[in-house]
Image (cartoon, rainbow, N blue to C red; front, side, top):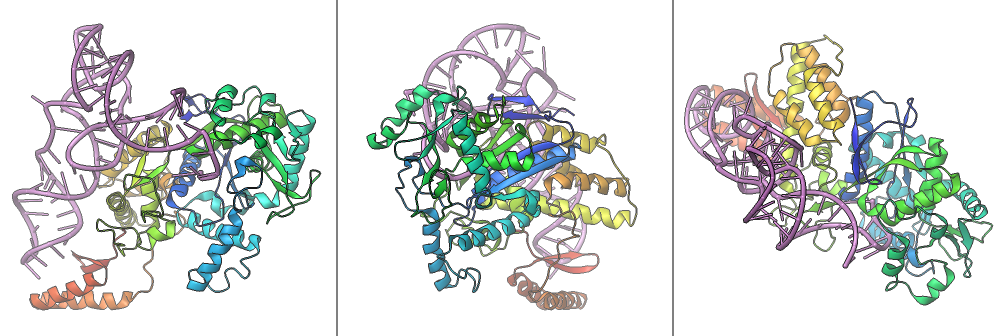
Length: 510
RNA sequence: GGGGCGGUGGCCAAGUGGCUAAGGCACUGGAUUGCAAAUCCAGCACGCGCGGGUUCGAAUCCCGCUCGCCCCUCCA
């Protein structure tokens, strides 16, 4: 199967082949850990997970690495003059307030003034959320790299860049990358140095420009002993620029100068990824840093940008715990199954606008339900029988064809959802097919390693009792009582349905 | 101002030159059910932002217009 991906570097869809057959090496720009990651962040991370799982579906071995940006950066890094508030300091203030209000659990952050503890707190929150949503790399601690643990590698690369004439120490003592030393600067984002110079003219102040050779030159290291996170270096005690960590960690962990795929949100195309390319290629001399640059479009919520003021700024926990707003701007209070959120965030094409809505969540829930019910039927029918299938199976062939076409998830769903309404002649084979499908989608169930979702706690046995009582009332034709019991079960947040085996209560998925 | 992406049924959305324009949700009718839910069957776009053009043939290619979104500044 020919896999085709859209490559931002060439603005075209190209056939994907790995640099080396044995392994696909991919790097994803991960979160900053000054706050909880929101669902827009996770759309991008899930997009990367989908690439990885798709490649694995087609038999590739994939080494996927993601970074955690835990270095405190100035909110206004571009100025390199230390202006603006450090994000880690801002996070410390917020955590202190949240500790008072109880939003941060007791003992989670001992000392909010210690930036490493703040970073640690949000890093764990991120990884927990990522695991809930089935992002594979989150389970691989060796492949989650923290910037603060790789400062020495960054310093090595900065030295190398200075030695090779790509970087210099400015009049202000800051180490800058010289964009004019790298002829391909601007290739990824479609900018030219001239355009950047003009575009910058109304933004940069004269004193800042005076320290740089070109307005687009960017910071690699800034000496600043007052910075909240700081390390010793040949250029003074301070902190690294925000682009250098990815260049270094990708090369270090993936072990190659040229990797196969680099992913991120569309906003990272410029300047972040442009700068990464300049750094990496400047340091290695290679003709490329990543062969494929792939970017996910921004997520909209209710037709607009997420904003805290509009109240439609959702973290993963907000969605799962029922804090999505309904038509009346009230929280729905309905818990959402992680698989539903996962599907909602991957079902639209990654290069088109995705609009997150309550309705969409409910649509996704119905698909998840159809697939999980289908699995249950197949498991019941197949018994202990297990068979192997390969990708030549008609369903897998069509499913794979859609995915291989630049991750056409909608097309893939169009293949499998109607199939899930059928009754296959060979349930064991169908189950094997579903497993292969689920190795990519990971929604039915979310984690293919654990069985079906277990409904734990929450007066589950009470509900069981009520269902029995309902059945008894129905058997006695006491319909008034039966209806009252049903209302009671529904009021507890369950959906009630009548099956040949009696009344069953289920929690809605969204 | 520069760069990129897109406008397909009430909603989400596939389809990028040629059968009756996937699929899901919603909706309508029927079966079933004490009722409801679930399930099953059936129905539901003569048209693909607007106007031209190319072609035997276009939602799909070309030109113009229009609307929307994103990036160019911290941001996934």
